[in-house]
Image (cartoon, rainbow, N blue to C red):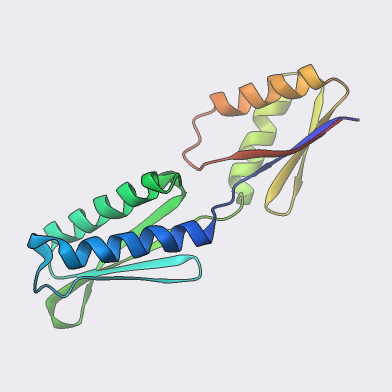
Length: 161
């Protein structure tokens, strides 16, 4: 029985490469000379640390730009709120989303079932498995899921006959 999986994974090595690019640009940009702006990553969290709101917004744009350059989807970033840090500086924690959370999975399963297609959708941890009798039905299901307004990047993998 043909099936495929819907997953949401971000390559953390490419995330690190994007952050390294931002750090290189931070050292060379004129408007960041002498500032205490830093960016660091621990597992799935990126911490932006800078002096004021304008530099924080510029740092956010640099991160998004380097994500696009490294062929990563900036939609995988969950921007936390801006916090005041020590010394009158600002800090923002950005989480890199990995996997499909339960609410989004239920939304996708509901949309697939409401479409009356001859496929079955099941939640398996942080991914979805779609099975059906015909490959055409599975391809139609992929089109349906792509048509949903989901801000998180999704990949369609393990397409099996």
